Image (spheres, rainbow, N blue to C red):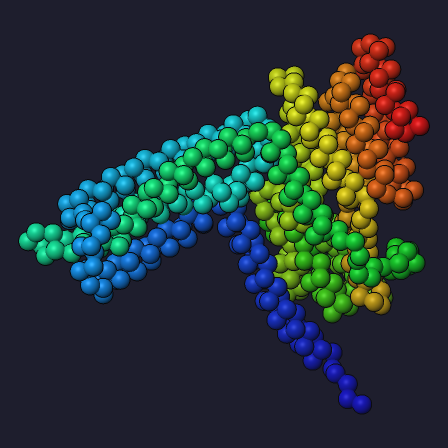
Amino acid sequence: MPTTAPDDLHVVFNFSLGAYASRQKSMNRFTRWWLNLNASLWFVPALMVAGAILLAFALIFVDVRLSHDWLAELPLLFGAGSDGARGMLTAIASSMVTVAGLIFSLTLSTLAQVSSQYTPRVLRNFMRDRANQVVLGFFVSIFVYCLIVLRTIRGGDEGSFIPSLAVLMGLLLALVSIGVLIFFIHHIASSIQASNIVRHAAEETEAAIDRLFPEQLGRQATETEAQTLQQNEELHWQPVPSQTTGYVQSVDEEGLLTLASKLPGVLRMEQGIGSFVARGATLVAVARDEGATLPLTKELTDQIHRSFSLGSQRTTEQDAGFGLRQIVDIALKALSPGVNDTTTAIICIDHLGALLAQLAERRLPSPWRTDHSQVRIIAVRPSFQQFVATAFDQIRVCADGNVAIYQRLLTALATIRQRTQDTERQQVLREQVELVAEAAHRTLATVHEWEQVQQRLTKLWG
């Protein structure tokens, strides 16, 4: 039976690792590139401007090819001369620039208001709002369309040519723009309402929970496998420092699992989704099986770095905790002495309770990942207790003496309990209830308010 020499095996491994790294690098770059485009205010308008240019040239080409004799039969639609067509398109173009400037001003004003009144964390949601992007692109596109058509109109000594179809389309677009402007004003007025802001953040988080924590998961490491790995003191862990600074936005765990299987070795993640990593901080620790020392080659470290996506801010694509964080920040701002908006805080608690109720019936992934033979990845996973603490701890602390907030917290926790039969999770909820009761007893000013909380506590929790 032929055998492979160690040098040949090293070459084969480096070759396969390099090919896999190249594919993974392209995929991660495309994912990050698409997410950034989706959250930008310029991408959709740029596409619409390109479409307007193509539409203008297409209609002009049709006007050149078709006979215009039949247009005389419709003077109300196509009766404008060259001067009239120029004047109309010029008026449309100038008005579209004015309206586009107004829309940009309203958008920036809305972003500033939302940032100061609620939380800067939700600005990304406004920038990703497709309606805002389309409206901005619509008015700019009409302006560009009119410019393209204007340059083709000829009259008098220049030789007569009026692209009647293109001019008519400009008029129709101008009429449609009136409805678009009214829609935008309505949309912008609705989007800054607290209930809609919280609802949009909750819907995004709900989608992330469905995506990240499905009902059924693939095989994970058993407790026996995990204990065996923990008791193995012969593993020599070697740190892989981060090359950049930022928040961990996503991790390609399947890629890391494949990489660890090829080593063969174990990868221990030191940073989880949403963690802030400074340049030089340990990102991953690597160890080879059976206690052998694993050389950290450039190919290996590059592949590990490509499996982590770091950015300037957290995102909800793989970070459901950030979605909870956005809603919590809105509640904290509402409970601040300068705002004192209890109703908004209650809305936030209601949505947090619904999201955690959704999480309560999901099986959270284990930190131990295996390749069907042994543990290959030790990941950093948020627990149900951490999600509950993220959602309610700071709100409870800031609800000093607010009986309505304490009652709503108890109601939300009872809603979550109804969705899970897991004893450990129910114990986490019970501990949170005790903390709420202790805070209410300590901070409520009157006996009547404390009795209200006691009644709610007895009714919901016995």
